[in-house]
Image (cartoon, rainbow, N blue to C red; front, side, top):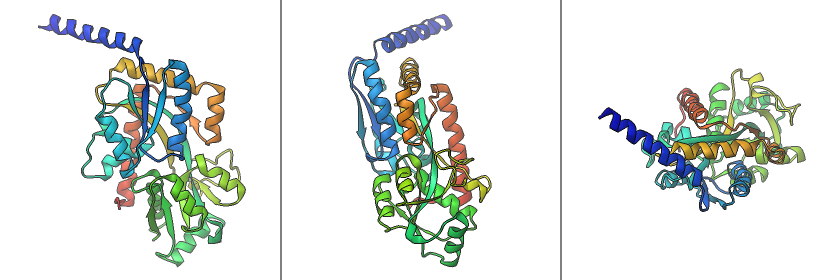
Length: 319
């Protein structure tokens, strides 16, 4: 039986390699489980445009927002494992939601990892009317006015939500009310309008508002100061060990052939090396990563452990 099993194993590998050589023979769809306009939408669109040129096939980005990314993730989980339907997402549907929700209609650990496009540091933003100019002043204001301040997030269970809860916990158990939105754009709109007081957002779409003075950046959540905002401190300078990055991964449905995953990953890595692409990502404050499938899988497992520790230590619950 053993020689027969080895024969079939070699045969299946050969078929997979052959199918990867012919792939893609038709349009490829990348599902983004969040609304248009945020970094989760903009980053894969930059890559998709170049993938389409490289492969000679349309690469279509489709937004399927809702339920903290679970709706879009479920659609990809149930798609045919042929490489023609992919998921591009930040951490929640890939590594966080399974730590927060008792029941999900998909198992994110079964996705086939392809790559991580890049990462963007989160930033603590406040509306100027709040009248604070530092993290220390914000913490003091929140302590002196328990429950009166509020913060926006991209939705329950998102990195902006978890980062704010981590901040509240590490700053001494602040009482600040969570106002969840459906994506970055509506949350940022209300922050700009002064309907909410503060928000943790990635710098991808908020940096122009900081530079214009419409919003105030009190701190970045990377380990060190961010080059584009040299006068803005790292939050770790006030709360040692604080770190929160938004990264954007690409995965395929379970059982997608490894040869196809490798081909897509190699194409993504090539595209991330194009100067024009690097410039466009830099405009989103993103640092390209371009991990291979094995590296992506290991990275996501590490991130699941890290966010799990944050969820436990901050006692985060989904609303």
